[in-house]
Image (cartoon, rainbow, N blue to C red; front, side):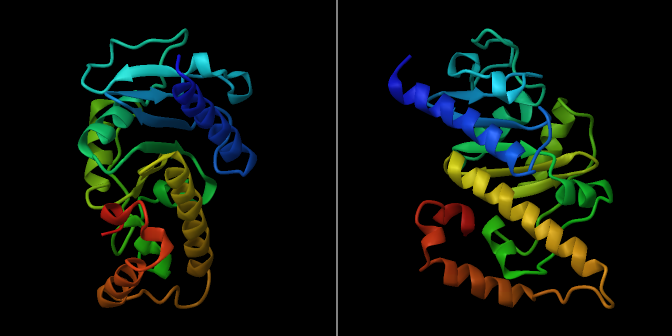
Length: 225
């Protein structure tokens, strides 16, 4: 294994530990993948993150059917939507899936996050959609996720959790933190009389344009546009 691949595998482990430490995820319910050439590197199934080593990270060809993978442990049960997202989205170098409390609470009500804050624009549009429901690990769930992510870099999964993508692992994890922050803010604003004031499409378009000359845009220009 080359040093660069080992480092990528270790970064996946480090981010799994970070998202649990920060309350973005609980237990082993989340999973992370990264593009590596014509394959993806993916967390294995049902393995405590504290026990992971770089050798335990699964490698799976992006053009395969999921039966051909290498590693001592079986892939995450959500391998299918990781593979399909990386196939369909050339702008995505990494995928983060987690069950953050506020984002998942909204997903349980099948409620999208509207433009209640200008930072919604970091997900590529005027909202963060909530997908339709399908059972975990299924092809149907993968289709639902791809539809909810169309033109977006994050979505909620109905009665399940959330997904974010980025040009690299750091960007994908940054978006998951931003998504949970927005979900928490939106949840709290719904408790106040009148609820949040929603920004217009024109106001969000202005934010997207402003991002074009801001540091957020340096590596993810396509994703933010």
